[in-house]
Amino acid sequence: MTYKTVLVILQSQVDAKRVLDFALPFAARHGSHVIGLHAEALPMPVVSPMGGPAIDFNTALQEDTLRRHQELKRFFGERAEAEGVAHEWRSYDNVSGDSAVSGIESARTADLVIALQNDPDADSLRSSDLEALLFRTGRPLLLVPYTFSGRSEPFKKAVLAWNGSKEAARAVFDALPLLREAGRAEVLSVDARDTMDQDAEMAGAAIAQSLARHGIDVTLSAEQSNGLSHDEVIANHIAEANADLLVMGAFGRSRLAEFVFGGVTRKMLQSMTTPTLLSH
Image 1 (cartoon, rainbow, N blue to C red):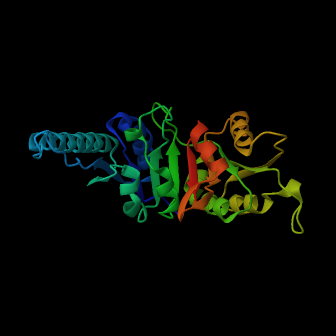
Image 2 (cartoon, one colour):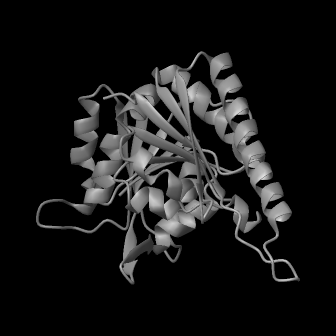
Image 3 (spheres, rainbow, N blue to C red):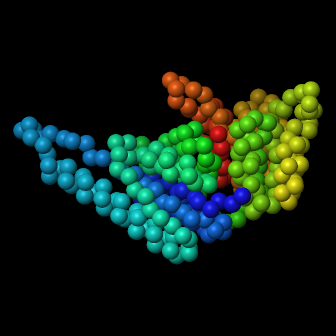
């Protein structure tokens, strides 16, 4: 398995450099074809104080939208050419202006989606609906911390948040190219329980054996939360293990027929400081 098609979500001009500094060197390492995608909000019809349409105002908004599309397309193309990466551009205009939502269809035909973590201090126009990419595409999402700077380098050590669920299993196997690149992985279980099939201390042993057959150096770790939340335990372990990649299943719950992030997933996305691959 390799990532031959990578979709990169570019939500705004402000964040474009940061996400491309990560995504394009990554794509070059994996021999990926990169699709850059950006959406803009359609200008809403307005009415002048005299009751007629404000045509000049709408025209100006449309020109601004076109300019942003062209600037991002040019920036993306120049950066991809400089990295020697095969690439294409897709742009959309819609009511939401959310590049993540606009990228749902494209994501379903990609091996991997790369997007930037939402900055909690940014305005809403720079935030994207990451839930849509996870719960509505069926594809793995590699999130880049909004604090990321510099160029991405090959991963060296991954932590796999393992609880034996189908989401965790899918994330691990979706991440195989990254785990092979790193060569080392640590299977982390938090508050594992004894079952008829497995002692708590051996939680994750079977998935570790499977990964070892792929040539990955795998170790097991078991943690007790002892009053901490699971996301805090995972974050602390990543720091102590000096890991540069987190792999975890994305968990959600249904609300009015729409999926939203479950507690651990949401908190990890808000506080993540290392690239994180999630699958649902």
